[in-house]
Length: 368
Ligand SMILES: [Zn+2]
Image (cartoon, rainbow, N blue to C red; front, side, top):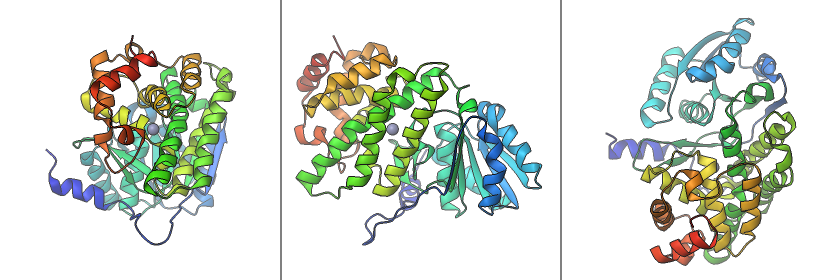
């Protein structure tokens, strides 16, 4: 059971964004390509992170990359410990923090998919030590971003933590992940199209800060994935690299914006609604992709291009393909603006009734 205090604890860990200056934190070393896992030593040495290291991994990601990272670091005389984390919940982040206090590593390495990297990101930020991101999947844009998604409370929280000091992304490691994670990553990148539209709307109607550069960076990632959709097929390393670089750019866009604004709008609120309703077993980016079709329609933008690109890479474009009942999809769209009332989007502007949500879902073919 999570108390009010635990929620306050989490929210207080956010780097304040209401300060008079604009704070940007960017990764310093980024190594991307085939076989780059062996560069982890060089990166650690160049950053001067010698002494001891703590690896945060899952059982699977430890087999795929964690063990190798540990061996490589130990061979250069670094003391290494590994802590297994299954979810990025409040409880597990506290467990990682206690381990940091006891073991006193000079660097934390998040080896795995979203949850492992999120757990490493937030716990290292709160304990004031650097962290390195070693992704083993491309399922979402947390690889390079300064934000961590924390689960296990009344709703998911995206918390400003810290950007990774370094990223070591090995295409050979990533290629071993299930193909569905690549599809999810594509959906998360394509969704930036509507995230930026929502941000522009909030700027013009609510005078919210809008960063042209970070918005352009996020849109460039979307464009890159849409234009190279044909390359993104199983067994094509070039396609994986396009997606990886697009996801890293999205993370950097968030660092420059100082928030998740360029990368998360109404389509993400829709995805969070589905999570809260527990009505979908689809991945984050798959849900965001469908959310982006709906949001693009509401923005009177080219929603068909979003849908066709998602379809061409084999991503879900209907409620049935997401594994969601039609009524739950409509409900998720209806309740989405209440997830973050302060994040103004097209859904807040239009304040759709249930019948309107159904009409939008039917008009876009998301439900039949
Ligand atoms: Zn996302």
